[in-house]
Length: 337
Image (cartoon, rainbow, N blue to C red; front, side):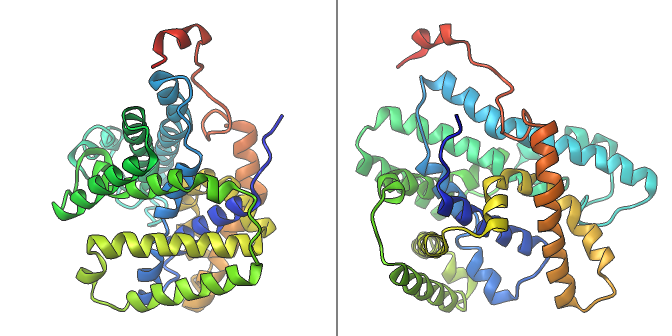
């Protein structure tokens, strides 16, 4: 029996993946993008923290996260690689499908570039899946040793703040991003009862609150970049944007198309870069603004009616719909903490 969906959570994920898509088709002005980048990815860490569970132990937990995050990452990487081979023989190097000329040895980039702290040109947005896996494992290790939520939250912020202060950039496999965004995951976990509770809130207060938050975000985004990226503003503006997105999502509750892609946002994340380049080409004769709008709408429609349904039906074990790696029940007693 399928678990009951929390509609406004699906909507918040749908709005967020829409912002990711708009960013990759360059649909933002400078200030708007500066405002959105404060909460676009932190919201996903926050939502993941809400649904964090320890399961039966570290082995069970790790296998679960490998099924949900690492296997989809590898699937989307190899799909991109084989697409690159096709583009190579067709002589097509349109940015958006692959972000650099094809190399046969790109198949090893997972072990070379990522281990050196570099991103890879093939389907680069999927870096988030590796980072979220790391955050889950790190938070799990903290959680089993720190049982008080407030202390756990404090330690998470100390780790994140120090990662920013000491400028830990280009750590292998995006671990720098994982450390920096760990506090958002921890706040999600800390606020899980509040977020998932059935507290009645006036919808118009939610709308007003979200508007105020977005205005503050926009105003701060005008500040010089070095000020915006100070650790206290990084977390303040990130949490402010998360609060705004959750508030507007709870106000709206559900938008059919956006809520649907939110439910399957991992599939959208993994496949949308294959469509950005072709859409730019198809709509290249239109004005820049019309090109952006038509590209966005076309990709959303293709996701909703073709790509997501096909992925669910044909690739459920590779798109986090079903577990590819099973977990033997007889192991449980051996690994419980």
